[in-house]
Image (tube, rainbow, N blue to C red; front, side, top):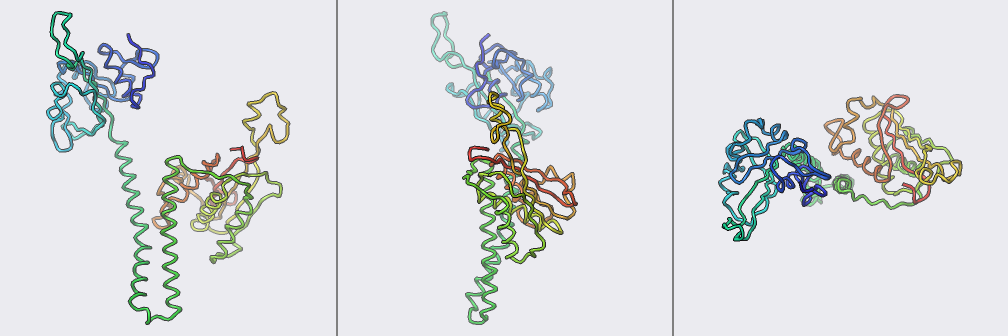
Length: 410
């Protein structure tokens, strides 16, 4: 039997790659990396029909997806077993005519097709054809390029439906978040332009301050959406420099106090001998700012920022066993843990798995639900981790760790 090599064909998924390799071997055999496997081991539904449209292979995944038992499919006409049609109700078999269509076709890319009961599948079709030249040596004329087999792979459409719902949620959330500030900006500017002379200077100032705050809100939302896009694409750039985390926390708190929060509401705890941390200063400010704002908005009482070193065994010591484990600065790499705590009701255990997801909000109002998702992405871009748990004195504690040491750490 021929070997399937890498088992990956034209960037297809492993199941469809193996199904494509199936076309070159006898019915019932499947090529995979290192040898032959059973068609039932493939994750995608695989249906193989011969030159007469009779089904030769109908694997277990195809049974699960279609609800058709293989015993009721094998040997039958594939066009009757799988009466596929498109979204307009046209029969795929009639419209494409795979057995008598163009002899140059080799495959059909993935497309959405439906069974008679409306079940949707993502379908890919590959052709196995005979020689394109006429065979005179065997004493007969063969039909050049005739279809010998058709290999059909089936996948459920649920994953795509989930992606489409996420996109719809994104559009809905963005539209909702933009509509309110833009309505305010439009209303105040139109009023000022139409009745400028009727307002006092104080009234004009209040209106312009409102317009400025709403413009900042729109800018912040757009920045968050750009951050989400970069996180999902893995394109977050970290420009490392020496960062004093307690000092950055003090700046965040000073900004909150300048904006009207009471200075008694905040406390920062940090030892004097913290290790060096080489991080992206702007992103650290974004992380701390989001966590402090979250604690102020959803928590209660004093918001405490605790910064402390955490010793962990470093990769360098493991990779160079000849070095002494007691060598300062080499055998152990310090991490820095930052905890932001409040004294509110805390986070219910059933909400913990969802709290870092996109568009998740504890309340129906209060932001676009992107802040904690972005925080998680920025922490992980630094090589760190973040968790949420109950604070020692009650309330919620968001705790993240980042690598410490020289600029080559993390």
